[in-house]
Image 1 (tube, one colour):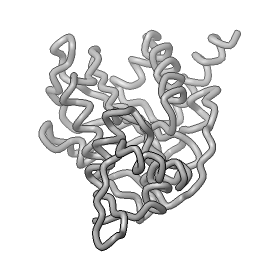
Image 2 (cartoon, rainbow, N blue to C red):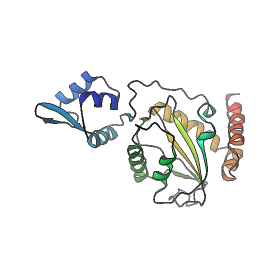
Image 3 (tube, helix red, strand yellow):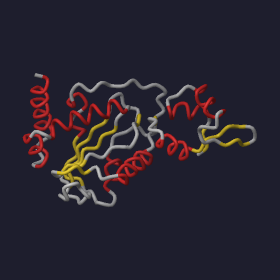
Image 4 (cartoon, rainbow, N blue to C red):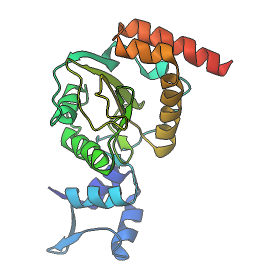
Length: 222
């Protein structure tokens, strides 16, 4: 698909003048066809990926960063998927297909960026937990970052650091790098607590898991 400067401005959340400046300096991939500037979507994604530039894959022209005080503010019943029929070779596509996103959001891009991250190093961190996330921040039309818990029917061999099979996959999609680091900090603290790890391994009801998160993060604030 050939994109215009306006399309690229929305995709990268940058002013059109800034995109024009990048073109003038030949610092961004583009083509000139019949005196018209056009951009290849895949080339732009790879370009942004190499520079850790966030990508907006919704049609929203403005997005404000959500500050994560506690994970419970971004969790609800729809954040948990139980008894998922996931396969080791296709679990990323299967998880992304379960996400409730606006129709205009390109899920293929999400899958691509998640796979790119796994190719660098497995996000299966050990103790049966995997934390897949895109290599760069993504805006998917939501006003908050996304975090989803997937509990596969059968444990998966995802080349975990401790060689143990994965029983819980926690998918994260952040709007900015700062937000991503904040979410990772929250998750790291929660995963250091036996009560939270036990709740995931035993696949507690989502309400119980959220209550445990509330209790643990309450002690952290205290």
